[in-house]
Length: 333
Image 1 (tube, one colour):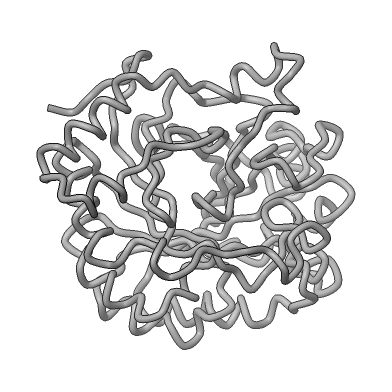
Image 2: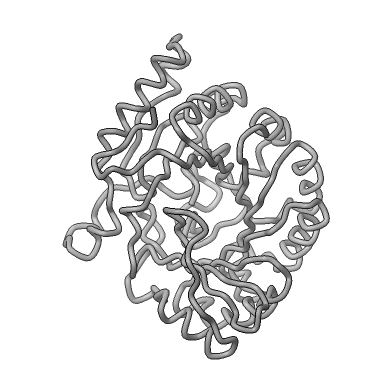
């Protein structure tokens, strides 16, 4: 049976971080001034093997998980990733990437069985995008990756943009315009206080309402119902039929009560909230010889005890900014 947490939320989605490494230093995730090149990434023997990931994924699916998503860090930095995709391809599998290695990887991933892909692209302006990725990379390479993914049949493609006031909020309309009519869906994400080192301030948040108003002033929008219960992005359709955008409003309009997502960290911890302070070790028991049934019972026990609703509590707590939290690149966004 599918376990329910203390708020009656089922376990439906699993995000799997396959690496904590990334070739970008985005300020909202792994800011260069904090992490630079000196951060101690996990040694190989602490990272879950493909076989371990596949085994745990099967256990989560047996508990009701319907969707799997591979994340990082940057997942395309994990060597032989198409092999893992092949091992998981029987499930509803997708992947989130910064797109820098997608031009050469899109076809192999699709051939291995990947169904859907989400590409991060925070601006089309080269200077702004260079600041957003912390390495000065131009958006051209990411756009090449999106084109390669489309050729490979990974459609519809979702394009994620984290919106930070004073950094890239002036380029939102251009990004929406670039993908209007393509069938790709741009999803604008409110800047969140994930982790503890990204210098988050409420003043830097551009709210969902403001995002919709800015884009709607150029391309009239109308809100449409979600595709499924618990969908995190609110859907907005262009009134002229040129497609749609999504807006993820974790700060201004929390959706904790509909969250059905668990996360598996690179080193095998079960994390029940993006803003969690820690997780439950699954790698240790698994490597010590735990059976599938024992691991299933452990996962179920953790989920049924789950109380997480950080985004709802954010506005009512005075200490939320001081809480210890896992960094985003360790568990995916």
